[in-house]
Structure formats: structure tokens, C-alpha cells
Amino acid sequence: MAQFFVIHPENPQPRLIHQTVEIIRNGGVIAYPTDASYALGCGLGDKEAQQRIRAIRGVDEDHPLTLVCRDLAEISVYAKVDNRQFRLLKANTPGCYTFILEATREVPKRLQHPKRKTVGLRVPDHPILQALLAELGGPLLSTTLQLPGDDQPLNDPYDIRDLLERQVDLVVDGGYGDVDTTTVIDLSGEMPVLVRRGKGDIQPFGLEEE
Image (cartoon, rainbow, N blue to C red; front, top):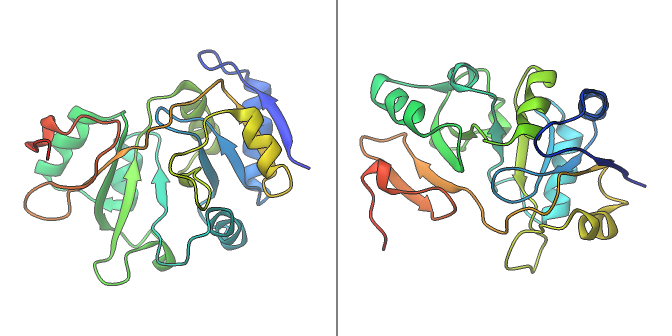
């Protein structure tokens, strides 16, 4: 049975943040709020937890997972960032974006695009998640909490508990979430490419609505 922590969305309780991180460090899978939709997360190096997340989502090994980072300094550990990319990232983080960049050797090969050697990363704008990342001291491996057959992510923590109480180790209740996903932008080439339209504004990247 999953644990259920009610964490204040603006002033997260340090005790509950610490307990959440201990669950992650012990191989747990958590459902948690972000500045977009609720998401599933686990430790970067935990293969078994990663497989559990894929099973919940109903996706295979080719479905990309995202590294949720605390800030740009942490992104630079896991992605190769040139001056142009850095300026775009600095101007648009934290926020509701996932950026595709060339991966460094710090990213396990199983998490990289098999041909392009890229990885998706993001810096969220959410107090609970920022507190978790600060306590964890590293990125969270994550994916949108959208179940097979659903057309949008889950956003009610009580529904999440009812549906996943035997599949995750913890549900973090940070209030009702959004039902939108992040905007995914590929910055690995010469020009930004829109991969998925979500909550983040695409205009700062010179992209226009289709």
C-alpha cells in the first residue's frame, strides 16, 4: 500500500520532504505534483524502479524518460550545452518545458536516445519539487502520470492513490494539479524544434503556433 503525504504546495514541510527522498533513495516510485501535470518519479540509477514506471505507463524501453534537475548547473552535468543553448535555457527556466539536448557520459545509456545520444531534461517551477531535488542532491527520473488509454494526465491526488496504491510507494498530495504536459523543445540541432506543444510558451524559441 502506498504512503500518502499531504505536503504544502508553497511551504513544503522539511520532515515530509526528507521522508519522501528516503523513499526515493530506497528504490521507491513516487507520484508527485509538478508545475505542469502530476508525474511519476524515481532515482536516476534505479533500474527496477524505472521498469515499474514504464509498466504503470504501459510504455516500452523506447519511450523517453526525463531528468528533472534543480537548476542549469545540474543540467550541465548531464547535457552538453553551448552558449546559444545556455542563453535559451537561462531565459526559460524554471518553467513548463522539457528540453532535448546531447547527453554527457553521466547519463546512463539506457536513458539516452539510442541513435542520437540525446536526453530530455527540465527545471521545474514548483516549490515541492524544488525542495525534493535540493534534498535529493541530484536529478529525478520522471515521466508524466498518464495511464494507458487515458487522453490526459491524472491531476487529483486522491484518484491517484485509489488507482495506484499498489503500484507506487508514495503519493505526494500537493493539491490538484494541471492536466497539461510540458512543452518539449529539441535544442540539440542548429534551430529549436517543437516536439510537443504543452503548457510552456513556444514564442521565446522563435516558434509559432501551427
